Image 1: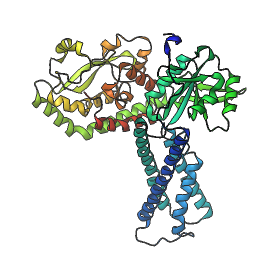
Image 2: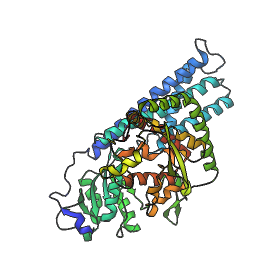
Image 3: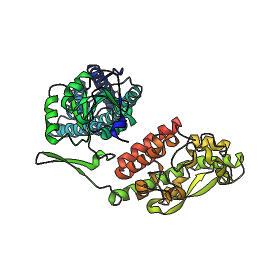
Image 4: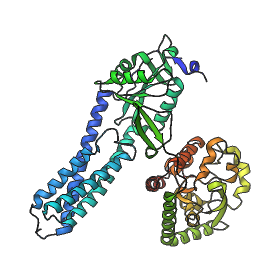
Length: 494
């Protein structure tokens, strides 16, 4: 497809889209920050009270040179200052990514360490038990509150009613379309594209659109175009005409306007911990670490997987027995079935699952192929006639996958990883898709917390490859936490 076919005439250069303008969005941002400050202050106050009651109860505290009626408010105030100092209210980290949570934890831990050292040096006699309980409860409360506030913000953004940045995208047509698609893929991130500026050579005499994005100008009038459509962010993507000198001048032009400049590199789907910026000769060189497929962290991941799986099997034995009994009573056939899947390095293994279909499901598949409701290499049907009554219930709550804990114990699978593919799927892999096999498949993963069967084949592969390239123990814990929510919502479970 050429750029000429992408550009179609439009009647207005920058039609109103109904989304909040720059000043309104800034007001929404300030209101959200105020809510966070009030929420944090309330949680810290409760945490300090819990720490006081847990340590002293109804007794009158003794031994401290400073009365606790002053210590408690002082801790709360110092905590809020610490959160502010570490950028926990910075709009660049609020509402998306893990950096917000890391900063909250870092601010709390640094303050706890500072208070402990200061109390020891000054010998003021503040109870260590009081401080330990207060900081433990307060840190956990802050993280939970931030999570709840973020979820509410995400829901508002998805409806178009929350604070979002109005973005003017600048670059070549192909790169503009790619960046627009990426930003729209996750609307809850808060980047709402309202216009585009493209090279002068592609700009026709009349106003145009790039896809459904209005083209509001060329590279010669980027600041003016951003002001005209109320954009508060200019996102620059790749273009041969945007030289280093021109980009630097654009930064100068945006100084004092309240419009942020964001540079989107061509490198995508690389997580922050793998990226390091190093200024060399005035150039911000981006260093990208290679993905880690072996080493100490992989050993730790395997140890955590097997230990957690062993504990889960021990705790869930009564539940597993009841499910097996229900399956046998519901339909003819065994409670468990073993299906060949492909694991790490292309090695085949038998994955264990509770049976949710009739015993001759593989034979009936040929008759249902034409009714496949998904693209790519997988077969999915919302109302698959092969699924039994108890099977529908098990699939809804993902209980049919619990026997895979045995595969985790055997080292064939991980708790978190890409979806384990069938040999027939792997035989048809093309290009980069085979990189899914560089790590162990998982019982859950980004594919499950992002929609499961509702995902397209392309999106499922993209999420699996992202995990392969950027896995971490912290990310695994986050995915496991989100899995509980995905299972309760039953989205994409059929």
